[in-house]
Length: 223
Image (cartoon, rainbow, N blue to C red):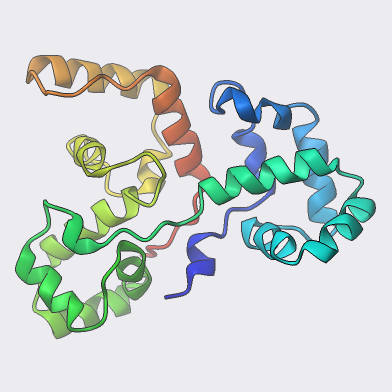
């Protein structure tokens, strides 16, 4: 599995996230001069989250890069923490209760254990067709597995929330990113109340954060 693909969040796109409406207060330090600082990083070769991770993995180069970019060390460290928090965390397919056990067994035989591995293996239409032939999983069931696997890439989207989103026809993080936060929260509220669903109504900030991050998470599944 190529984890770099799953962590390829563009620094320029962070500008849309660095707002009080979407960030915990502990990260508000990133809001001031966000566009300017992000542009400085890009101009000095730090273009995505993988570049940030590589920089901090080699501590000797951090101060050198700070001098080059003239971005405050505290600011850069906060961006690193934020992106690290939102980096891909493998989720075992056999812990997703809504997936069929025989399908999971078929994938395990091919060495596919985690949601990210499944997404990479199905990133193109040709790859999906090949996997369907190898596993005999139906196209409908595979699409369902890909949907829930993709949504659960986003930190804070557990299975129950992913299923809730899927009930509104959302099939990927990309589609979630197209939603209007206010209208979508209202739709969720009405559904939870109508069907007496045993879960709290997500707050406006929670929904806004999910949608904003969904806009900039790398799109893995291609047509």
